[in-house]
Length: 207
Image (cartoon, rainbow, N blue to C red; front, side, top):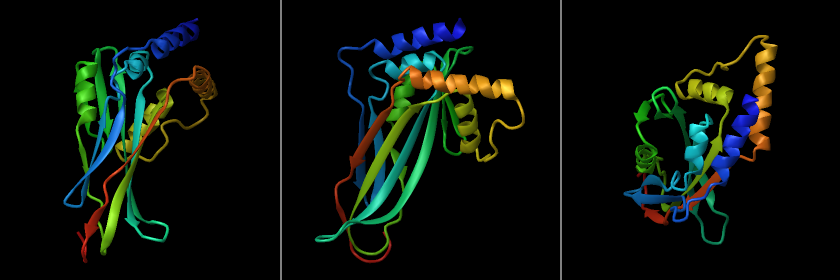
């Protein structure tokens, strides 16, 4: 019965639109050869906020790539930097928790406060070696987690590579499998954003 009610709540959270919501966007700005990655409007339409309040945390997985532009050739991949953040709702405190790579945890009292935190530009210092024309490519995947996914990812963010669940808890494993299936059946939203920076020139050495 509880699973059925959760399913109905999720459907409601996904299908209720907000008319003038800002479209989510991802931008990459280069300042002195250093990338600044910024997202805007991720929570503006209320869709992900509804999922958070329904007990489904969100994972934000970023991947920034550095490329060398080559005229007449395929562009050359140089290096990349991935990082993650997890947002969840704490029903007891009625606030929102944001966990970033490295284990830093911050709490926000309202969805608007959480969104402002997610909107802050993130500086990524990918070293540019050599000379030529370069640019950055960034991809952001926003996905919905279940409880086990959240626990395992939280451990990883804090530097613990041990799986969160081990041993022979068959009943728990079946329950988690059912929860994963419910997530897929519900058609919970996913979001992928991509952005490319302007091309910038580096003359010799390491920037």
